[in-house]
Length: 513
Image 1 (spheres, rainbow, N blue to C red):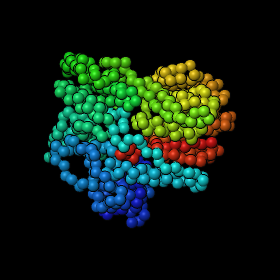
Image 2: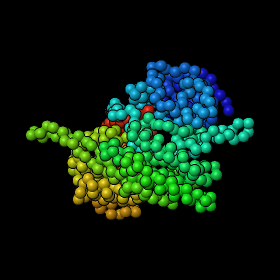
Image 3: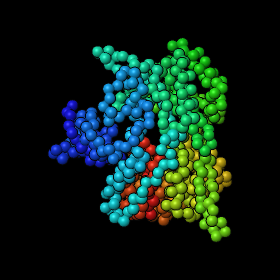
Image 4: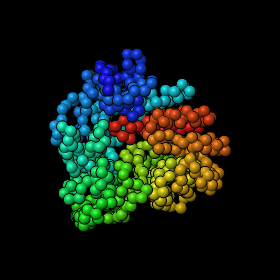
């Protein structure tokens, strides 16, 4: 396809998309490694009426004030290096994560702040007094992830019209731009040293097995994913081995599977390190860890792990000016959502609590997950009752447990239903909102369903509540807020919080009245 030469990148949008322009003013949207001030050569991969999409083929120059750090990961690949990889290097270099590690952390935050400012440009025109506050730093720049998902696969290249298998038993991450290839990962800089040591041990154990890795083209064989979850405040670890067992009996490999599971169950290092070990049998074709008919079996432990969030609550009484430590405990099952960065989640929730203000009444959380936000708020002494809605039934089971652990007999109610259908499928929810004072939405990455926006305005007519909007996508958040402003809501502040250092992702808080 057509190439473009010596194009200067003007700025970055959310998702790491770079913006440049052709000589006729037509927009160029650039994926991967785009940074403002860089001059690049491009390959156009998609042509639209008003814009083109392109990939960088060569970086001619870059702004040295922005790119000011040395990558810390041995698996990192950057177009900045213009390096030709050997066959062996191809299997270990090219991970698609941590795209910002060539920048110092302050520069990463400056870039994210600019992305937020850009995302809310239209809102600023509608609400000139809107304040976009400075981004809150993550307590950790590295080793912060409490969940990591590795994939099994192969590394295949085409040479002289023949397929050449550079690696038959890879375990790691999908290669940048080439989803069918798995890059072998020895260690990841986003998880802890303990999690890396556990990963290395299990990787060697699994790769020494004669059981084959799953083939995405034939949809056969065994190993699919390895998921590790670690909780910083309790030091508990969960491992979920995701496999496909459809062809085990036919290929006479059932005994090998049983031998492997027995080894995992009785290994001394695993016993000492892992709190619980589960195996998920997933025979769906899609490259996901869980399908509607998958089955998860407990190999060791309870099948769940427990963590807690720790908050410092200021005591404003005249008798005691010291802050109090508040702990909120959570039960997390293998597929339950929980904020990936535990220490930053504590900052996120504490900041959101201050922005909403401390008062009494009922919280309605429309995407409650395992109940982490609402339960934390009640534990902090905010509000009296909690109504949580979540589409994932397993998360709702965890939410009930979490409320019991942290809140005792305090009044809560959870329902497993889509937020956009909640008030029709579970009519009793309406009866529990007589003293509604806060609604929380932390929606999926896309945006709020139109029915949810309508429901929020209908509720606003009956209750003078505040709306706490938390999002990991400032673009869709701005789109939703514009619709909410049109309905009559108001907005004064936007607070970015960095939950994902080394990446383009940003968490954003807004409180609407």
